[in-house]
Image (cartoon, rainbow, N blue to C red; front, side):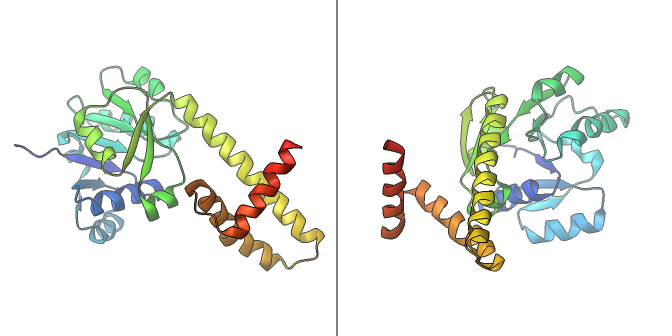
Length: 229
C-alpha cells in the first residue's frame, strides 16, 4: 500500500511541537521552508522529518499549514500563481485566528480543513497529548496524524477562540494579582518571578490533574469555603 505523503509548512513554535511529537510516533513528515540552511538544520533534528521543495508541495496528499493567520492566504495564493495547483492535496489550516470558512471562500476549488490546537505550543512540545478542534469529520489521512498525538473533538472554531480568551484572561489576571500581592508585602521581584514560573504554574497543573499535595488541598478547601459563604 502506498504511504501517505504529508508535508508541513511553518517551523515556528507550533510547527516544531507537532514535528517533535510526530517524530516520537514514527510519523514521516516532509517539511518546507524557504531558507534552505534553516530547513536542513531543522530536518536533521528529527529523524522522521525530511526537507521538501516548494514544487513538491503539489505532490503531497496532505499539506499542513502551521503559519500565522496573516500568512496563510498569501502563501496559498503564491503557490497557485506559480502553477502549484494543490487540487489533489488536502490542506490543513492550523491558524487559530483565521476561520477555515474564510480560506474556503478565497479558494473554493481546494480541499481545505481546519484543525485547531487548543493549548500552548510549549505544552504540546514537552508533553504531547494535544487537544485538537475541527468543525468537520476529517479524512482518514489527516485524522491519523492528529489522533496519534492527542484527541480530536468536533466543535466550532469560534468555541476555540472563546476558550483561549477565557483562559488567557484568567491566567493574566492571576499573574497580575500575584505580582501586586508580592509588592504589597515587600517581597523581592525575584520571588514573584519564581512563583509565577514554577509554583503557581505547577499548582494549576496539579489541580487539573488531581495530584495536589496536602498543603495545596487545604488552600483549595479554604477558597471553596469562602465561595460558599
